[in-house]
Length: 237
Ligand code: SF4
Image (cartoon, rainbow, N blue to C red):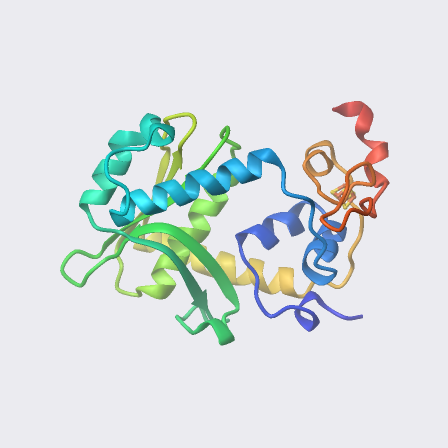
């Protein structure tokens, strides 16, 4: 049986998260590369990300109205001169590598990098819409662990989620001891994901609800989604 790693060389939080819910959806997204059409919520999310990025880079004067609910946190972050919108790549040993050899990949919205003198990192992920716990705590754990792979001397990583629409910024702190543990966890998770060889429909109310591959939705190419297994759980929504 062919494994996911025979088709794709990288995994990210998003592919891991899809694989946790339904491996058939993972197949459609990663192997067949099917995409749903852009929806207004996604377009708005992209616009807010871009605004926050430009604000942090100093390319926008003043605080844009759409970011006002998170103004305090953004101002504090900007003062610390973060890097913004950067791709990070790690190899199978969790060591920094280039894009070509990346095994685990992440796109950072913003990060105040650690230094030898101050081995503390602040990672920030911008979110639009409502909070979806507990998924962000897993994402926080992965981003914290990623930071240790990129900057092995880091002692503490704070990962914050800036909920732009809610004006709320929950954060998670990872110490070195915790990161040593989560590093093993994420390497195992990555290996397990890439070894996936059975791509089976696993319909669940939450998984199917937001899935782009449902037969009652249209794909980017205008055709209907390929999966009708969601019908078994529709009555539970
Ligand atoms: S609709 Fe449900 S069962 Fe079908 S691919 Fe999506 S998540 Fe899986």
